[in-house]
Figure 1 (cartoon, helix red, strand yellow):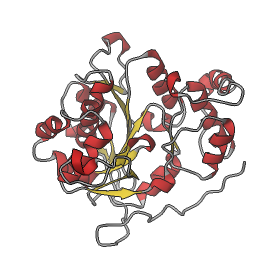
Figure 2 (cartoon, one colour):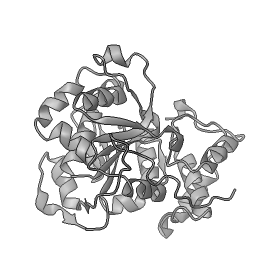
Figure 3 (cartoon, one colour):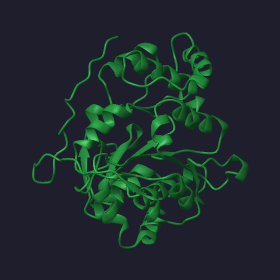
Length: 316
């Protein structure tokens, strides 16, 4: 399977008046800021600024089960390694994370760690992205793989000054009834990208009030679509460049990857995460894992499929 680099994603998103969205420079956060956020503190002096690099932060919603934490670690060992090293990656989990399980990339929230806590965790992800002053907050699950080079190239050519969320739209036909007339809904599986202007527009005035707005909701993507649109944020559909649906065979995964999506979904074992990363490495679209983890990586790649199949929800 041969892939070629393409710039077809550049300028895909448009502003409210049909204008092509352009890039705004930003900054990276430091480790001290991440630790301060875990203690509900914000210290803007910990930020450093670069005039040329946008601050793209990856946020993962997860749980405190062994399998979920193994998937987060698989992300850190593959596509998220560079972002994590630059403190542009964090995961939000529930209140039952013990102190000895704490990792500086994982933020423990007071949220329930079952499905009932999804909207609560989403609220904390958004609030953290706002405090980190992300130009773009990329919201994901622990079973997503990201082509970071392509995604960051795409976002560097879109303006974080437009109050927008880009993702897959249209999953909830009952949205007007759920959200008092708001029609557009988000499909969270493929991830979505929240601009700095959107975060500011929602959280700048009364952040704690916004957190409370998430409370009545059960589903996180429905909550975000409803609340952000009520605050004047526009949803932009980029469904053709994200994969939110499950793929259950090696053939299906390779076929999906041949379209060069920015994200993949339902990679429900660390082995499959490492296998996908290996495909990107072989095609020059991702860097090799660090040498000290290479043997583990190769071992996991060999376990990705059983009789050519993978990625069942029950595995996660």
